[in-house]
Length: 71
Image (tube, rainbow, N blue to C red):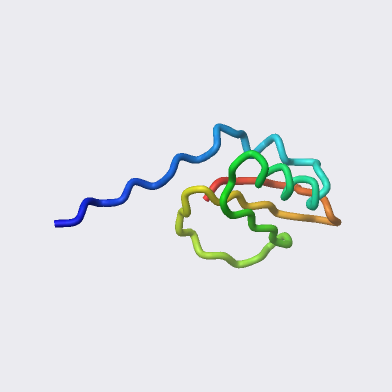
């Protein structure tokens, strides 16, 4: 029987550190810090609630990260 894969660890990084940054800078910094997926969304976007290890989400308003969360 095949073993169950172990997901890679998430970066030891606080999503709050990205709030207030310009979105292009925040995306670049997140990838440099090891996030495998970075998703930028306008306020109020409907998204599914599945948790994806290694993904960082940004809610972007007027080109600036207004909110950030894992998954």
